[in-house]
Length: 217
Image (cartoon, rainbow, N blue to C red; front, side, top):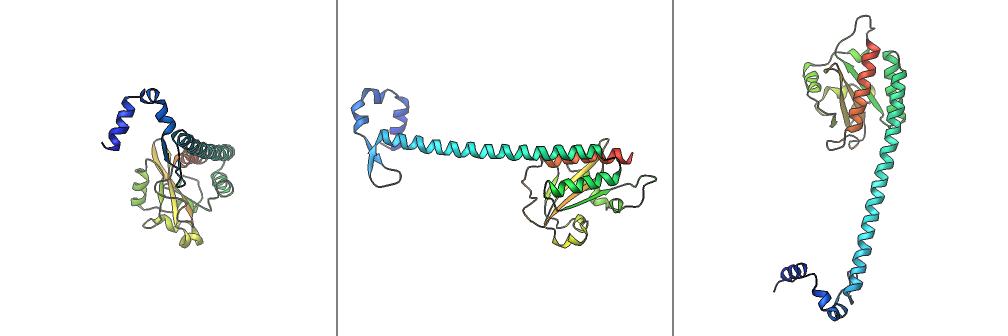
């Protein structure tokens, strides 16, 4: 008889140990962390303690994630309030730079918009962007996170451009159409990576899009 057969039999006959109480008392199994034998009851207690330790570790991990998300939500709230208060395009850019640098520790930010509104002074944010990148931004269902390799955005960060190793690209939209792009850059190659969650980056894009549209209206 195979061990699987024994396990299946015991599962299908839960009253077995009720009918053989003396057997339960006499059964011994190897200690999981030593060579000595222990009773099956003691082995169950050890298994339950180990399970409790795992559950406590999981609970601690979930609490940590919750606290981190709460902290990020507070930072997003402060950014939203700042963007609401920003009346000019330059104020919007300053607010984004300030909060992303000080609250989120994102060292580099670049913004590009496709069309220069009438009456707006010539700013680096309206520097020409290739049609290829505009088309790429149009296809972004969610922010792109990953390497700067092969992207013209790698040159958007001024003197720091040669040191940028990872980036997040967030489409700016107005009325359903894509009107620009936010690029967040970091010297850390693991700061923005392909499989990371993008929910807060999406929220950032929505808030920035609304603020930019209002400021340039």
